[in-house]
Image (tube, rainbow, N blue to C red; front, top):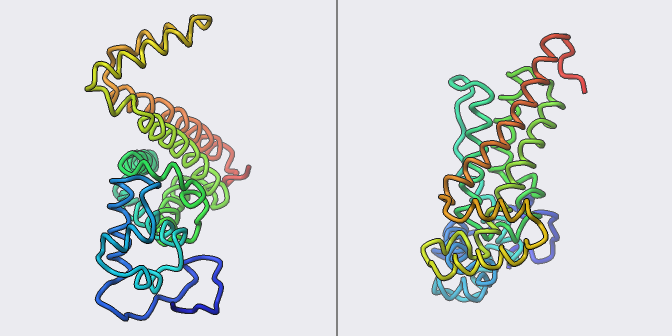
Length: 250
C-alpha cells in the first residue's frame, strides 16, 4: 500500500498513487458512486466495490486507504457535477440561484450524502468544493460584498440550501415521496398523519391540503420560497452597503 508509514490529515494531502495496474482511482470513484446510488451508504464496502470491479481488495487499497477516504473522493465527484454560471454573463442573484438549484439537484440525485454530512460540509479542501467556493466569492465580491462578508453570505446561502435539500432527501428516503405511485402506501401515510395530528389542528389542516399535491412541484416551490427570502436579505444588505459606502463591514 502506498505511503503506508505516513499519516495524512486528508486524502487531498496525499500524493497520487503510482500506477501498478490498469485500474485507476477515477474508475474506482465512478464505480463507488454507482454502488452508492444503487444500494445506499450501507451497500458500500471495499469488498463489495472490489467484487464489482472484479479486482482484489488489495488493489483498491493501493489507491485509497479506507472507506472514509473513498467517500471523500466520491463526495468531491458529487460537487464536480455542479455547473456554474459565468459571472460576466449573469448577475449575482442569478448565479447564486443557479448554484442553489444545482446543489439541491445533486443531493436529490445522490440521497446517500445525507449520511456523510461531515464530508459534504467539512471537507473544505475537496478540489471541486474549492472551485465552487472561489467562483462564488468572485461573484459576491463583484456584487459589492467585501471578501469576508462574501464568505459569510455564501455560508448563509449554503446552510439554507443544504439544510433544505438534505431534509428533503431524507424525507424522500423515508418512502413517502418515492412511493407516490403506490396508492396503498400513500393512503397509509395519510392515515398516520391524521392520527398523529388529532390534537394539532393546524398541522392536520396542512396534511389534509397535501393529500393530492404534486410532490415535485410543491417541494420545488417551497425551496424557491425560502431561497428568495435569503436572497432578499442579501439584497437588503447590498443596498445598505451601497448607501453607506461601508465596503461590506459587518
